Length: 203
Image (cartoon, rainbow, N blue to C red; front, side):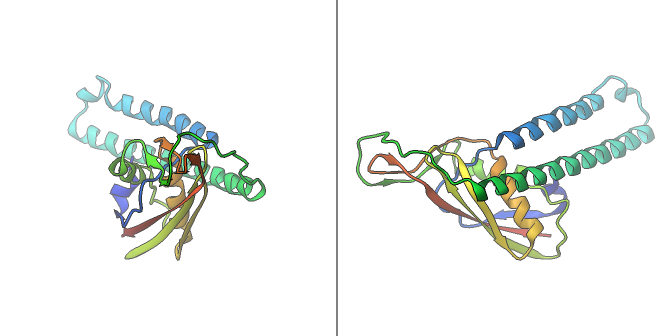
């Protein structure tokens, strides 16, 4: 199901500090809906009937299974992109009004911390990235800029690069990571924190 493995080699370059990404409710609903469909396909391939197929029949079954997965991945990605457009429209008309909260009695600046660690964040970006709709040859890059808000949520995600399809998929990959984060703080008060994530993909 991971199109990155099928279509390209993926690199994460020069990650700065820790990152947090929280799915919007719309993305979460889409993800859960298709997770059920993918599970049905996987369960069908584990049935006792499969064990009785000839080698030719099994190969045909595998081809059909992979085709079904590809169709579902494309449909899911299209719904993700529609939701991404909606999210960006909302953010363009609604500014964050999350209040700053004093969480600790401390001095200095504390950056946001990704709960699962930076290596897990890299893996989540890899797993969430869909390359099936990207038309490119060779190496392409972008930088994903985003803000970790005062409540630890991620907002204002923007991929900057020459390939717009790659930019959008990079934005989605960041939004779809499902860890949690403590927001950044200054003198104990929660603050917005701007981050950047450079990405390079090799076809």
